[in-house]
Amino acid sequence: MNRVLDVAFALFIIVAFLPFWIILAIILRCTGEGKVFYRQSRIGLGGKEFKLIKFATMLEDSPNLGTGDITLKNDPRVLPVGRFLRIAKINEFPQVINLLKGDMTLVGPRPLTQKTFSFYPEHVQQEIAKLRPGLTGVGSIVFRHEERIIANSARNYLECYKHEIAPHKGELELWYMRNRSFWTDLKIVALTVWVVLFPDSTAYRKLLKGLPENNAPLCDTVVSAGSVQE
Image 1 (cartoon, rainbow, N blue to C red):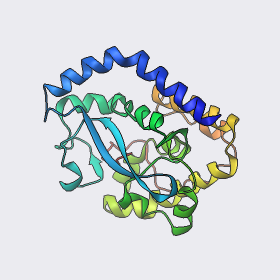
Image 2: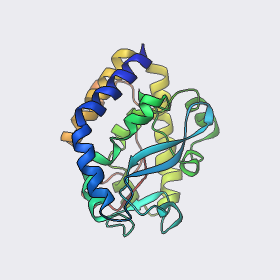
Image 3: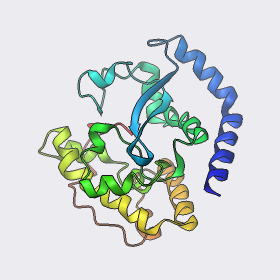
């Protein structure tokens, strides 16, 4: 049933937004490096890598430049049009192609690069690899202000992610595995839409019971500094 819903959702998004995608493709083709899509290796089901598809928002060689998997505020690798696409989360839309191909499902653990996936404890890696990665997930909702944690940390961005973010995000993914159901997935999808509209909302605390506590030093007054590519 999940696979049927994934395909139906992907086809609906592709058909509904196709005219907009065509216009956006022309704009991207005529700006920046002339690339429309960006493909990056992510860890998927069974620990196997697949190519995650997004609209191109950064220099093609960005993983090998500057801060690698970490995107900073005002990052010079981000292309002019890409900056708007990232703020509006429009760059994420082509992931429905991964949904259609079966690389991903609608709700599940967010797929990470090999480097950031390796920051999860070994037992968490093994458990997460049992599930197909999701277009959205509980980790993405709870850590939507991940960049503030990085900004507020005394550690550098990679050490912060490894020691302050990855352990808790891993526990959130394990929580999802223990509590996954159609009802849980429905709430996560609704919360995803909600936090896009209301980024500072903490509604997830009421709707998703028993979530592991977040001990990372989040400060709402800190100006965003960076985030790990998701």
